[in-house]
Image 1: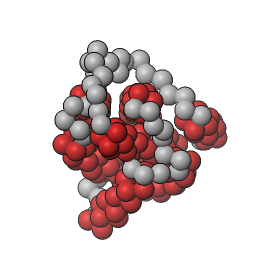
Image 2: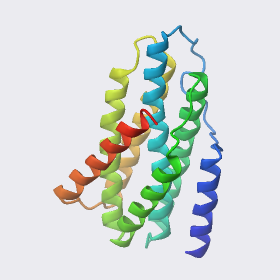
Image 3: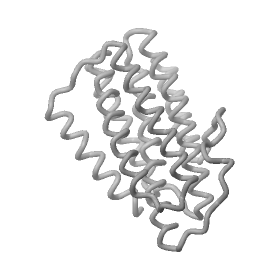
Length: 206
């Protein structure tokens, strides 16, 4: 567990330093950049900043849940998902640069809060922890669909990234369900939704 915590701390430092790697080509990399108005560019950047922050939170959640996973196969599930989430982080970070904007200034806070939430989920046991993944990915998939609708019509590059992220998130949720996830109580799902809404509202601007 000590080694896992050290690895989680190292990952946090790398993320805060803007170091994220991807083995897959960024979706939409072959698409030409289209001309966006200043307002469209700001809006697209705000949405991509939210998505980048969501991936920072995902890294924290998976890292902390892996620390407290009882079964090795569940720990591997979290590790595999975390690797793909880091690719999402790299894609959204690159897109923010292309849009001339930056990640959320509050990412250290988002990471710390999500790490604590992941610990709480992990301590409830593997089935509850997997249930948390299922609900998280369900909500993320829904908000990514909304982002695809809200992105400027001409921003095909951002839309390609968001679409691929949504497909991956749906797969993560399905894998967690197949691994034996427990269904979370309705109040817990509601609190998760409220917390996510607050994050999205703030990260869009800050």
